[in-house]
Image (tube, rainbow, N blue to C red; front, side, top):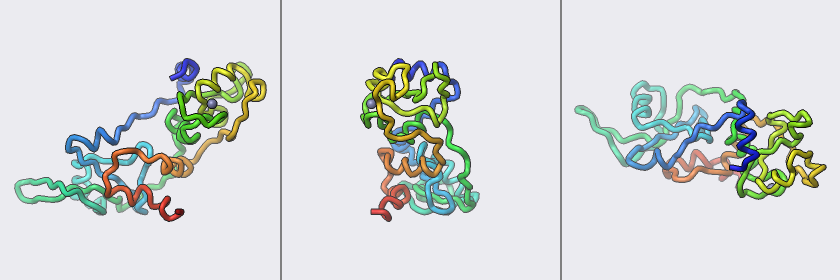
Length: 207
Ligand SMILES: [Zn+2]
């Protein structure tokens, strides 16, 4: 992380650190995570991906809150029953997704496609105040962009025009749907094969 980004984080408490989620850590060691779909069979969340532990998934099945969509080969056994572990479940009750996305480092990078807004580099990303703080620039969706450390250093405390940099995309406050659409472009690794239809079907329909 660049020094400038570090400074922003230290001085801007509203730029919340994302909750780290590691799909691979859930998938390994016989963890058998279950992908949770909304009642419309779309994932509840892409980032972090909506997953339950197999224990929570089994509980939801017994409480009849979900429909089982797909299964692992692995089974669990109690004294009375043996049942396969669900790999994908869909909620029976639709959960409205009208909340505003959190202003997090991860969501900001996601909005900007994990690329520098000035030069499209994907290396060593930091944050940049488009209108510098000394000129009253706010720490907000509309004034923070992803920038590589080279562009950030070159820009210093100046406006893009003063620094001879071109802002390729105007920063904006994204909706949850815009972030989810971005999320489909950046699929997390190590997915169970039965999840793929539900994570990528929009992409396949468009292709
Ligand atoms: Zn750059």
